[in-house]
Amino acid sequence: MLSDLLDHNERWASARLREDPDYFRRLAAVQRPDYLWIGCSDSRVPANVITGLKPGEVFVHRNIGNLVHRGDVNLLSVLEFAIGTLCVQHIIVCGHHGCGGVRAAMEGGGYGVIDNWLQPVRDVAEAFAAELDGIGDAQARLDRLCELSIAAQVRSLSRMPVVRWAWKSGRRLAIHGWVYGLGDGRLRDLGCGHCHAAGDAAAAPGRNGTGPSEAGTRKTRTPA
Image (tube, rainbow, N blue to C red; front, side):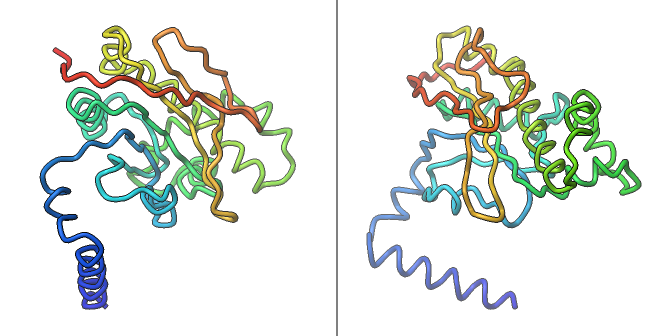
């Protein structure tokens, strides 16, 4: 029931005020997140909850399949604001095993508008067809494609003009590729990140890789 949501909100807000009477006043004044989260719309993967971050600590963009489309005005606007105004230090592309969007892409279409949206996932599946075809278990094959797609989105993100501008300006902006396990609630770094314009990134994430964890310095310039 919708009334339950309002009741939950009232209890949550009241609890915050009991703990800290100035909590919302400070939160309303400014946001200074260090992180931009690009994640999947799946309701089981809420960024703040699974990372233990509070309101104001992570700037969030979500879509089906956690995809980075160069023509997505929504994403481009989020990137420009997060990098140019908020001066985030880390961008995390986070997908999850068992992703329904990735599964739909594997199945070849027939779902409507989303078929066009998921084309980048099909491109990844085609590029890594030999590896994927060698995985006999269907669930393991799906999960591997989820990981490969995350790595592809990290690469696409590293080529975005606003990201290149940040690196050219000397910003220590780091991009990370993470995967979330629905079955165990754990986040894992795929080791496919970039932390500067010439940063190394694997063509595909390793099973046990670790990515960069460098913090950057904040600046206030915005891209022209």
